[in-house]
Length: 596
Image 1 (cartoon, rainbow, N blue to C red):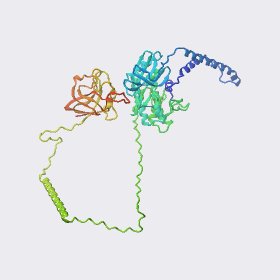
Image 2: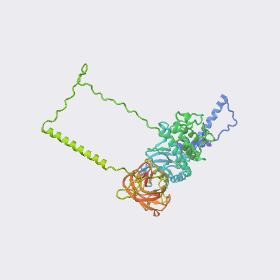
Image 3: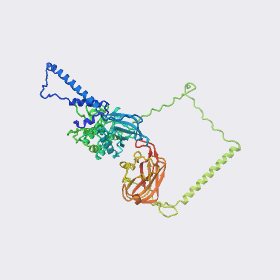
Image 4: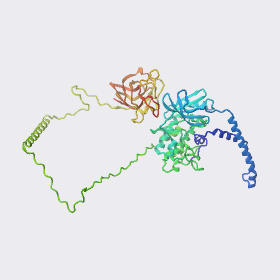
């Protein structure tokens, strides 16, 4: 068993959505805190019934004074001008672009909305607060820092603006995603799903902390699972800034929050005494029980990993392994676990075949006694007359001709057959006397980087997905308004540089793409190095091609010797909105194969 963290539990136990009367309650609490406390250091711990009766009027008087002070504090807080969100309603437009649709949260001086970006015709999320709000500067700074992190495992910040008396932050909206809270409402996750969740979340948070960002409000409501099975995190740094949450040790806070998510995924219980996020807490006074002691059948490795993430101040799991204090340490511990395979699909036994119940004797009961044998039917009479004789002679003649031709061909085969000569490995072309070219073979890709000579990348971390051999993974571009040919004044193109490991004779490249349509244009260049910014003018053009389908084959006139190959895309088709980007001109590469 392990002790719970006292510094990070307050953040992890927050329910996320407080009632709109939170300000009045906070003012009352402040008034109670400001009331003078009694000195109980020298009071006796035991009292008689008579002493209790004498103390009761004093306690009532003190409670009335505290309540009165709290009421006066609330009135004073209401009289003072406080930062409050402007009166907004559905249909209001921000920057003549973002139309507010539905208010999701109105809390502590700010509000959150589902909105529509009318320029790109896609749904977005918007956080709104007045510019004189005490946390407006922190929210803007957090949003602009988060926007620089282009990791696809986070819900991206699209815009952060201060406009007159408003500050608003625009972020992605994932209509096909489901909160972890909803998934846990039906029961704990399978071991494979819990493994995928903690692996994605820990790796994403490790990347965020390397960039100097922290979440501080990781909970089941901030982790989303898309329809494709990927896990996304929303509210990085922004949610904590909106609510004024801070931590002396952000890495430890986020690590313990990931441990709480894994614990809840394995047990459908919140690893603290209080109930939260629709989950029941643990019994009071027992500490953090390992998940495999709370629920039967929990994966042992994941159970120990959850306790290591929740452990604090030297308390460790049952196997005395060191606690994980940063997301990077937790991600490394997840990688050390044996990979958990998804469960085999359940096989449903088909129903037994039921023979049709045909009546055995539709005309009545079978006759009694043995059935007498029936004589076989008489053969048809032979053809008579002149027609029958003509047919007989015709068939006989055809048989004689067929036998003669067969005998002649068989004899010719035996007479002209010469001893076979051993053939060499390479076939020889007839009439030329030259060896035919060997059959092309696939050239393996050793490494690859995104090619962006203008300094603006697309998704650099997705490049390995273009040569992993999996058709359901891909590297995607951003969505552009101009197309299908890209606007050279804005962006000349997008691409990837591949390393074949050594100089090879490259003849053909096959590119599988996600979006068909009019049209995709790709050019291959032979480069001198694995560079993301080398100019195209110094490279040798291999070949190019254009397609309106989802597969493109580029074939060189003759094989070109090259080690580094640049795939340069200068035109992309128009595609509708999906879970990653809005409608526009865009493309995604699933697999690239080089032959030589």
